Image 1: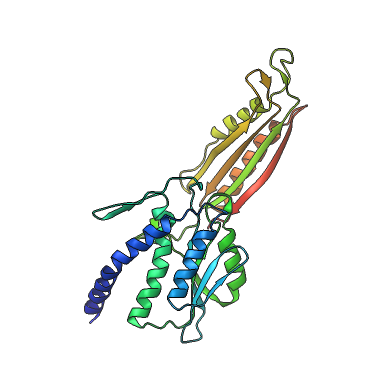
Image 2: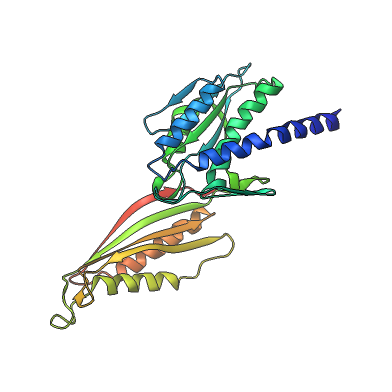
Amino acid sequence: MQVQQDEWLTSLIEEHLPRIVDLTARICAIPAPTFHEAERARFMAEQFRQRGLPVEVDELGNVVARRPGQGRAPALLLAAHLDTVFPPDTPITVEQGEGWLQGPGIGDNSLGLAALLTLADLLQTVGTSTPGDLLLAANVGEEGLGNLRGIRALVERSGPELGAVIAVEGHNLGRVTHIAVGSLRLRLTVTGPGGHSWGAFGQPSAIHVLASIVAELTRLPVPKEPKTTYNVGLIEGGVSVNTIAPSASAVIDLRSIDPAELARLGQQLAGIVERHRIDGVEITEEVLGERPAG
């Protein structure tokens, strides 16, 4: 009996495959860089409404569709993020071949969003009732400096009624991730007196100081297990080739799956910064994002 049911469900999913592919391509074609997800959010809201689901859009732009359950069990939140890492002017072309689909943000996370819509279709087709409400959410601010602002707001608001939360990611097809990679993202800004490279030679350069901080960071040993990493992803500064740089900044990403290791790495970076505080130079640290590990 179970085998027959599994075969029937597999057949049903295969029937929906062309629709999933089409939805994924349509979603991918809508630019949605972090902090600019509104157009894609409107698309998702309309798609949920077409399926007869009540929809709410919060002040951040999160889209939440509720499929009422038949019992009193806690609600299940399934969330797929709207935003992508690609800037608004990225050319978007979706290509398809035998068993593959590619385009900017197809897997992260156009497919995840299409999966939410398809799940609503499948549940309606089979007439399945859940013991508690099912919340299907398209959330903002997952990538980069979005700092999980969308899902944080959803969990904070819906927390009392939730029994579980599952993040739906296209790149996670066929696997379940149960370990959270924590991160600490910082902007270091160094300022100094500046001056002419010849006439004021010897004055501290903001770029030289920042470069020394980065060089020392890259010499830090970090464990392979639990995996812990660092990266300097952006660097800016200076005025001209013959000017002692009066300012320079770097955006730094620290990550670990272990909270203690992440904290230790953050403390090590803070120690490096302290060692570079010299006369005539100011160094400021701005926290851009924090994601818990666990």
